[in-house]
Image 1 (cartoon, rainbow, N blue to C red):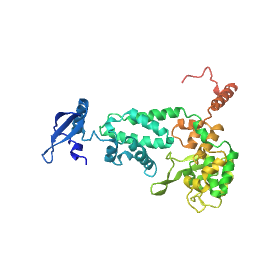
Image 2: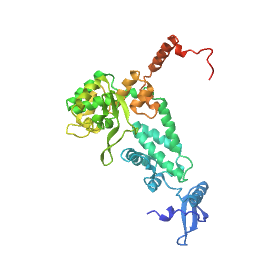
Image 3: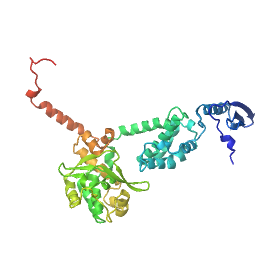
Length: 396
């Protein structure tokens, strides 16, 4: 059993005395102080190999008397000590839960044994590189984010001066963003005929699954957002569907909450979607759900996956890599190819960053050719009287 005296930390403000004893296998370094409460003489001992490690141990104990923090704590011990402090400001029903899983299943098994003060960008870099060979980008994101947040707390507690994970995450994500033009297109269905085949195949199980597929693709919406649609969200006057909320499987069960961007967004009603919306809204009150499953329950992506045997279904249609979220990518890709302006597409998709929206642009830069065509048409037009300026007009 470990000696608890070897994990004792000096309180803030106490005076330390130090001594070193040379051993065959290294050094025995000891720090002693007087406990302010009991007035007894107590201390801590560390067995190290080099003189440099002796000085490092003494320095850690001195810093503890200045900050009150255990500067020798491992990442796992420190994360446990701060509890849920690093989750402040996160949505407890989704984001916080996903980050907590990332911390528990990936971060702490990989880095939890290392002292916080000894974590380097290189260590974190190699860990993330290893994750990239095993996990999806979203899983990696949900692992980096809690690591950054925990180490942000370590900076505030003066355990470290800078957060090495933050710089690594920024460099990685920045590199990814600059290379994403056209990269999201690979997850999209090629054309409307193929989408219709997929929807028809789902209809053989139940019509609600078919409707979900069409809504997700033609509204470029997440599955949880389709589940959150009400009849009143369909604005026939302006031919718009308002995506205001999502029905999300969170901690403790299904919850209704805001969209991921925390604001509603309008999506135009495409002709292919009109008959489906007419059927789903007919005879219903505005506050009723637009779409529900065979037994009246909420349709989650997991429900659709299991009920339709999704993986086998899409493989049979030659769409092996298509996920349920790929339906959103499909709608976004088609709108981008149709020439929808980038800022309008960003509003439809609800992206905070236009860099994310750029991932749906065609890699051959056809949007630039269209921009050139429009500019040339404008320049070739004859000048109008509105654009001329009288010579004798006063300067303002």
